[in-house]
Structures are given as C-alpha cells and as structure tokens.
Length: 454
Image (cartoon, rainbow, N blue to C red; front, side, top):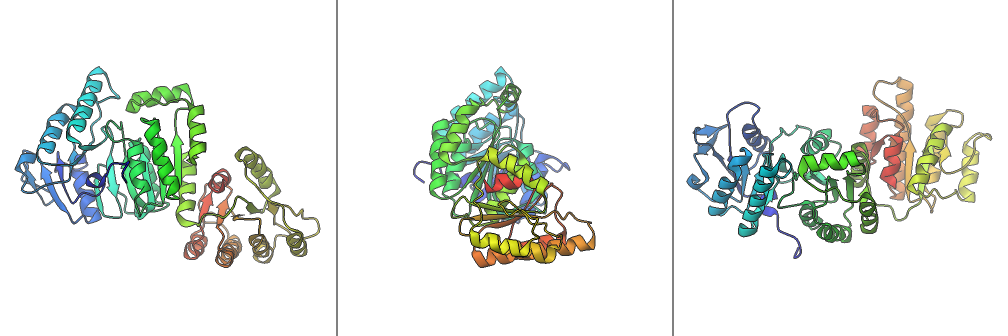
C-alpha cells in the first residue's frame, strides 16, 4: 500500500476518545457510545466531557490530556468553533486520527472556509488522519467499532461491501436498507483532509472488502482518484459509483453542501469508462448492483440470457438494453429445438425469451431456464418473476418452482444466475428463502436488473 495512506488508526482504532460525550438522550455524543455498546467493541473507550463523571457506564474525563492511556482516534462532537483547539490537543497526546462531525466549515461562509484551511494546515503539520468535517463518521462492521453519530440499525450487518459516501443521509439510507453486509461505512463529508481517493485506495488493499460503493458529490483529486481506481481494478474489486453534478442545479447544491467542485460530467463519464468504474444513476441501482456483486460470481463473458413472462416486458427490456449496450446472443440451433419442444408453436424463440407458453409455469418455465443456462454463449442468466408478499397461494407455488430452477441452474453451470422482478415491490419470503439458501441473488426492478448485469 505504498502509494496510499494507512487509515487503520481511523477505521480500526485500538482505543478511542469521544469528546462531547453526553447523557442527553438522542444526542450525537450519546449515540456514538451506544453504537460502540451495540457493536460490542472490545477496545478502550474514553468519554470526554468536563461536567460528567461517566456516560453510559464509560468513565468520563474533563479533557484529552487527562486520559489514562493512549488513543488511536478521537471523535469530535463539538461545534465548529471548538474543533481546532481539541484537534491540537489530540495531536499533542499522540492521536493519529480524528473524526469531525460539525458543519460550518468550507461549505458555509468565509469564516467556515478559514476554519477548514486551518484544519487542513494542522493535518499537514501533524500527519493526522481527519475524516470530515460535516459528516456522520465511520463504522467498521467487521471489527465491531464505529465513530458514527447515527444509531446503527439491528439489521445493518457485516459483509463484503465498503461504502464511501459524501452525504451523511445517503450513507444512513444505504446502511438501513440492509440489502447486503458492510465491511466499512464511511461518511466522508467535506473531505478536507482525507478524500474519496484516500479511502478507495485503502479499500483496494483491504482483504475483507470485495465491492466498493461510492457516492461522490465532487472529486477532490482526479489524479489520485485514478490511481485508487486502478488499484481497485487490479484487485478485481468493482467500484459502483453515483456521481452527482450533471445539472447546473446539482452543481450549485454540491457546492453549498460540501464545498466540492462537481466537475465536467462528460470528463467524469470518460474517466469512469476508462477506469472500469461502474456509474449508476440512482440509489436503487446501487442497492441492486451491489447486492449482485456481493453475492454472485463474476461472469466469464458479456453474453446475457434473459427469460420473461411478458412480451411487453421484453419490449421494455429491448429499449433499455440498447441504451446500455447489452449483448443478448441468439440461441443455438440445439437450444431452439429444445425450446420449441417445451413451448407452444405460437411462442417466438429468441433471447430475451418470452417463456409464458400456455401458463403452466411449474413445468415450462423451469425447463426453459435449464435450456438457457446451458448455452455456451450465455455468461449470465437473468430470470424474471414478480412475486411480492401477499399474492395468491398459486402464484407463490409457481414462483417457488421458478426460484428452485434458478438455484439448480446456478449450481449445475456455476454461472451467475439472478431472479428479478418488474417492479421494486419485494419478494414473497418463501421465494427469498429458496434463493438465499441457494446463493442466487434477487433484484428488484427491470431497469435495476439490467444495470446490474451490464
């Protein structure tokens, strides 16, 4: 990791101090400590507040100089005007990292920009790793430690996805969706000292990160971002990025929110394409694509096979696929003959395939899945089936048969296979259980599914 900073003191501290610890319910200074209790963090935690003796059972000290032992990281839950003196004190006791919650820095006014310049200068002089300001912090779910100011949901769990998110609210939304497990949740805020390139470069070398999600309002250092993205590509870790700033309104909003420059969107598109960064447009696409990458093997090629139960849906798929440049190879003569024996004479045989047939889904659809999965030119197979919770028992039985056929196809061929719905309406739990046990991901929404296999 020679070209990237070692962020371990920030992301995996052995001991930490919480400055601004509080007994007030709902306060950030209390939520940080509650998260540490919730996660079961085993390192030393020192609460810091001049008017408390203890907070949530943690001994409380009047200031950092009174701590009985060293700390790697300091969480600063203070107003913007109080941050710099405490950062200087933290550097004085040997802390290597800090997280600054407060807003009122570069995103604010001239005084805020001066504060941020002072913060950067302190970091340059001391080498301190500073997350933020103007962010909700970081959570290391695998090692059960967080300096994170929003209550972690019981559903948020450890897994292979690491997220670097400039927006605190979007970081929270991704975490609470709980569609997959997280290695790291990193809310980067203004990125005054550490920026997305620093985090992505570190994650590229992290053995427990398999997929990197990035929500970018601005790219502070394009050159270092390129180096970090290239490192992730060499490590076979996909970067799934939402980069806002296409419109003038978005650029103005970004400048007001984090003080970042949004940059030319055409340049961003070209750079992402060259670097292999997968650019997504919506958070729904991020959730579905990250889930797919986190749970499915990578395909050996670009050939997509797709089965649907609707000619209308195939028309929609054709329009979306043309814009995305997806490749749907035609069926081989052998496969066409097999499908003609399964489906009625009036069924058109093509990829994507309308496999409705006569509606006998328990037999015809699984048989079609089996044929398509064995095609040499099909590298990833997407199977459509809508089964939201609460549908009729007959619908559930049919969907369970389709899910079982998808699991069997994945097991037999070792190819990526996914089940997707037309709408973002969820899946019947019985169907989800079959897919989860068989290791087959399910994706919600036609557009999201196609983006995921793109």
